[in-house]
Length: 73
Length: 227
Image (cartoon, rainbow over all chains, first blue to last red; front, side, top):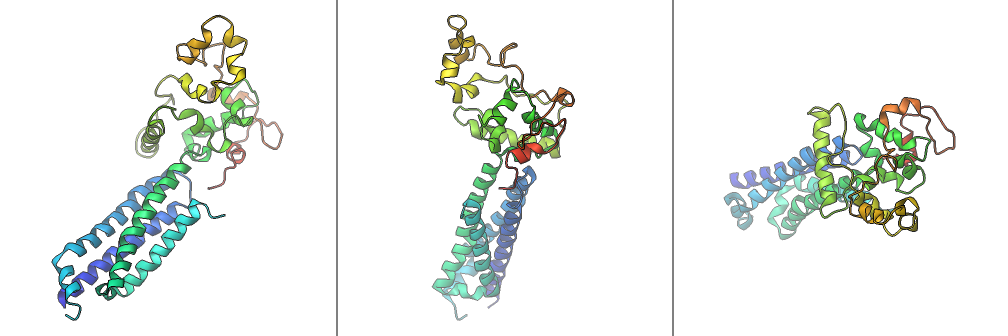
């Protein structure tokens, strides 16, 4: 059960980071300015990359495997 | 109506909504559908929006408004409105010989392999100089202006190929085409961005009125709204 919670926490974290990244991307699209490009690339890119990596990690980690096979755990 | 920006915004919004569902109920990932939802919302959509976003920003970086948004470039933008067609950038901008909304990029990218990519890298260096580094006292081209950039449009044009001055002596045209004789040689097309003398010049305005000074008008003339 604890492992399932761990996985859910990771998914939530990944989701939150990706949403924040998408939000930054959205805001940066409102302006055509060099700084908007940098914010998009650095802030948005990093947040999204971190979110994706955490998600991928949750897939390959032991917790993910256990939860996926033992749904009723 | 539905341009790339609208599609990108739609992808961002849909992605955020799907992730919202996942955040609210992460336990759905134990089902097959939940796993697909997680994969699409946490992997496919972010990658898609990221790559489309880069492409969109790169396109925007070609706009005149983007180039002149840095303070150091303001005077160069203003020089596009000099009310004298002998100034090459002004003559090109005002007569639509280059697209007004991408005037800087049209003449200052280099039309060689990876030229656009190199221009973008230089642009990133300029952004660094603008915000974190030191802006040089004198803004200069990295290399002398290459005729190739002019010939990208003018090569083959009758006015260029048969122009009296261009054919004044035998071989002159070939010298220009091989970049051995610069189009911007003194006495030819040497009047470019005369930013030092802007205060002594008058400016053209798209509404037909010639003004002494009109900062920011270049953005209006270039259709300067955010894309």
